[in-house]
Length: 590
Image (tube, rainbow, N blue to C red; front, side, top):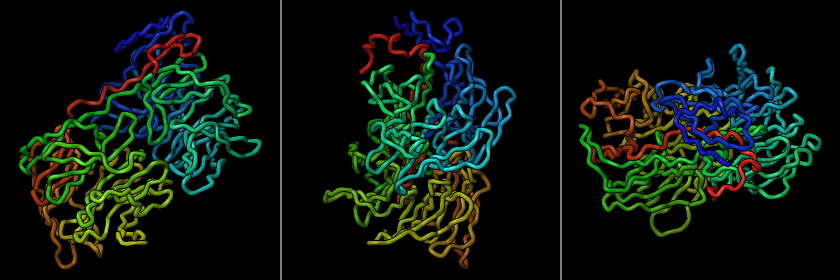
């Protein structure tokens, strides 16, 4: 029989972790109070014997850094692991005595017996790793490119897979029992899915097309997500081939459509943990004056990505384009009629990610950064006359964050990251035919979101420290444009990415305490002069469930989103025995 024990704080000590063949316990494991998963990266790993689970978690209010938390599933609480700030993609050693993870551009390990954290090697923008039985770790050091291998004692890493094209991304490896072969996920221009590395042939082969990574479970199965169901299929780790059919073992499993990871862990002894499919956060829209007076907008609540929502407003202030998100983190683009309350999808439905829309009034189009795989391109989405979106620029290995246009609409300002290190540079590109980007600012620091004043004389941008754990927060600076002067900080306070021009000579921003400010910005003798910052919104901090997503400068007002229905509480489902012969008939699976 299957016993559904939906307990808020279950004590599983009497049940054990290896599964009772006559009874299967299914329970909810709460994350630490006030915590949630790290956005965009895999955050969960189960020990090989299924007795302990580790999660990478961050405070909901971003008041502290992300770190690792460990829990014995027979106990009630997660406990923090010291020295694991900024941790992501955790995974266990085969003996269950150590945990490896990525943080601050490094691959690290922590030994649980003594708590010592050691750096193993460089990993500037990692996308997962796996610890083999022969004392080596295979890992993805960057968001693009091949996999590398390193000793679990540390040292120089060595490439082990070679992409055939610059667009390929090899990630999310899982070692097989021989300690030399492994399966991994590949973004491939032709067939993306799960591939296997054959150490004898030193080559890779397709195992199956897929939209999720695949976990290997001894003695011979792959586990993956298909249509929100967790599936298991026989797999020969020597022949590197699937056989038979796939069988569902859990329903309603969350997977990340953009990065193909699954927040889960599975043990051959029977234990399973996974993040359940949850409803996306729903938010309402409103206008807000500089004094803080709000005017609701009559549009149904929309699912918008928390903390990463950007919108663009039409010149007449009557429409806005905004990014939406579903529960699998697949992002799309929609046009909102702010007066009639209608919502119209735009762009390409095959895109898995759309970011930072910009209204191009001269051509009646929306510019955005979009991807349907590992490669991002700068796209133009026509609003009149039909026709498909057109690619303006894209280079393998780079991501783009669009932020503003020059007053004549001919030049786009944006930031770009090289996926191997995720360090942002400020760029411009003319929107004419066959144009290429030109660097506006490139430094060792991480610069993002160049936003040009309405008259085009001053550009503001955000400077982040390298490997900062709090995304999109840093020092707000300004300089002249198009010939840059020496950058000048606007405020000594840490500023969020919710900033922009409220008027031609007035820059507005939100600091880390969520208070809104503005200052006059003028140019004198080729240098930028900054006035004394003054509070906006009556000096009252914004609530935690609100975000400013665009500024309508001609009308001196803010477009904001207000949480209407919060995202479902994050948690983990624990199943004491996932094995098909224990589960039996599962009528809840679709």
